[in-house]
Every structure is written in C-alpha cells, then in structure tokens.
Amino acid sequence: MLNLGILISGRGSNMESILKSIKRKKIPINPSVVISNRRDAKGLKIAEKLGINTEVIESKSFEGNREDYDKKIISVLKKHGVTPDNGLVCLAGFMRIISPQFVKKFKNRIINIHPALLPSFTGLNAQKQALDYGAKYSGCTVHFVDAGMDTGPVIIQAVVKIKENDTEESLSKRILKEEHRIYPEAVNLIARNKVKVFGRKTIIS
Image 1 (cartoon, rainbow, N blue to C red):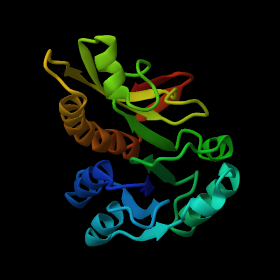
Image 2 (cartoon, rainbow, N blue to C red):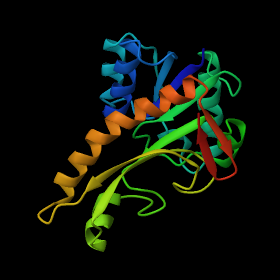
Image 3 (spheres, rainbow, N blue to C red):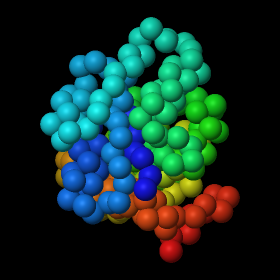
C-alpha cells in the first residue's frame, strides 16, 4: 500500500475531499502526513481532526532557495514513510513551485490539480483567463507534476460549461465541486496501480 503525503498552504479543501474518501475506505492508501508551508493554514486543523499527522515547514526562512526548502520537505516525507518507491505526493493548494530536483527524485509520484482543461489556461487565475478569453467550456485537470508549469501528463479531467452570466467566483465554485470529485478518483487510480505513463500520455487500465 502506498503512503500519501499532502502539501498545502491554506484551507486544503481538495486535501479534505481526498482524506474523507480514504476514511470512507474508497481509496486503498495510507494517509501518512499533511505538510504546510504556513503555520496558519486552516487545513492543518482539518487534517488533525481527521487523525492525520501534520508538519509545518515554514517557507519564509528559505526565500530564494527552493532546493534547500524541498530537501527539508523530502526529509519530512521520508520520516513519515513517503518515499519515491512507496509514496505519492499530492499538491492541494500548495502555493510554491517545487524544484526540478524534487520532481526528478519523485518522478511520476507527485500530482496536482489545476482549475482548467490543460493545456489551456496554465498558471494563476485560470478561471479568469477562461472568462476573459470567451471560452465556452472550462473545467479541471489532475496531472503528474514535471519541471514545467502545469505541463505534466494528464491523468483525469472534468468539463464545466461556462454560463453567459458567470463571474470568476461562480465559475470557480462549480469547477471546485468537480475538483473535489476527480482528485480523489485520480488518487484511487494510482493507489490501485491503474495508471501507466508513456512519455506525455497516461494509460488507465
């Protein structure tokens, strides 16, 4: 069974949806630790209520040094049994760009969710980007993390129709509902060893 580490910076609503799915025995994975780069992240209390180990590694003292910060993250993951051989790392509102060294060490073991249908609208404010562009559909994407910005192989996507009267807030809310559905689904597929990566493509068995 894989050991799961989740990285957060805020409330961690996707973290909560994953952990609750695990608690309901829907995902065969061991939730080992939730790590935050901010001591005031609300998700820490949610994780603790659900009985999950939490750690804080504040990023303020590592400003300008991603590699050293990520080495500390890797050491804490390892302490809780989350390794490249038997671990999975989920980014759930983790507001840091992880270093190429971290990505390389945990190749195809780090996943993230993005509030758009990649490869469209990468980076910040994806929902606003979709509205400004005049897109008719948006959604969300769970993908493996590589050295680029939202460029890793796609695991699963969900489509959300954009309404004429949508605001950034209303669209974000509907997309978030889909995020909470597909992120646990992606974790479940990986936990059951049903996802294989071939270059840019994933094959789900």
